[in-house]
Image (cartoon, rainbow, N blue to C red; front, side, top):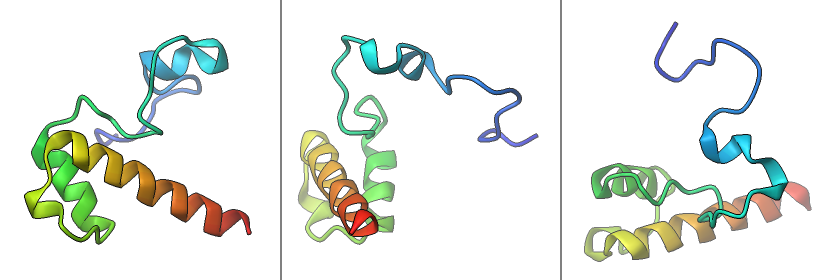
Length: 76
């Protein structure tokens, strides 16, 4: 079993375990606690322009925005 495969059904992490009633802030599905390198790699995969000069916080916001656009397109 690979590192990203789940062994059983249920929440994928402690944040997800709280469900809709969790009071913790999220970054729109973006792991804001991830390393800057990881966020940069995600931004690169999403083809976010200007990513090389962005701070960690800017990368999180840009990834969130790109994810929201992709979700909106898939729903229309």
